[in-house]
Length: 332
Ligand SMILES: [Zn+2]
Image 1 (cartoon, rainbow, N blue to C red):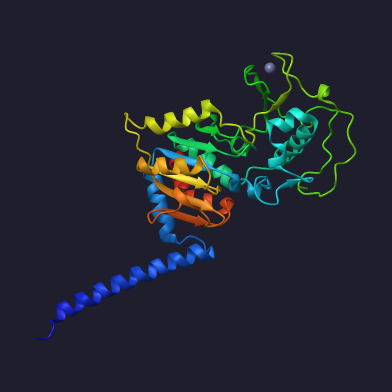
Image 2 (image 1 turned 135 degrees about the vertical axis):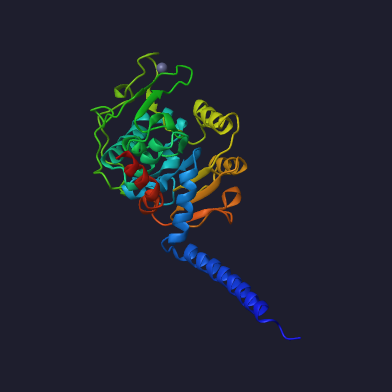
């Protein structure tokens, strides 16, 4: 019996739809590997979810500040003089040679001070002002988010800050904001901003000893050090606790998270992967903004995620544009 005309049409339509889906997924794959700009459909889909989201967890890494000119010291090739961050950012090294470690931080402070927040810092700060249920977990120490106007109450600086100092004795507990560059006049900054890797041996030693470095005004015994978390040290407990509380809170005791934004971080290390997993469990859809697709383990993008590949400074404002435009108009 020949197929009816209607049934033929139906089959054709089904075949077309399935072919269409196949092409779409192919396009998506190609886009992911070739770093092509996000499609209008993907942007619209993300924008519509962002619009309806109230509780948003944001995980921030070095990729957010890369186009502001802040190098990723923890990546391969991130050297200061002949030292890697791993060689200097250690308590034992500070105890042995605090002048050398403060020279390194002098330079990093100068570099961060000279940098400007980029459009991604600004867009995220605007989004935080609009979405009061947004919390940023910041792994950067440059304070560019704060300088972009990100509300302080909605950001936890998990790795400390270049511009806060504390007593190197944990028991003492003294901590204060300090953005002096140089940290003491006896220790001038020798490198111009932007020069990361001069392979030169140490320049001539300065007339600076540990005695000249700033001391804790509370215990009057110990040296002050940056609050940045060094290798081998745990993350600041109060900050980890606040993030945990936020994850548990939710609206009316329901710990639902609508959206997780992962910006400029490789997500392979703890706690990054852990937070993504917890946000997923709490119902969040996840959007990755990264320069490359290299992610692994728990943090590997899943089918329902958005993956924006490229420079965060371009992609973050592009993805938030619709949401921020709307609020701009409604404010008028
Ligand atoms: Zn002290």
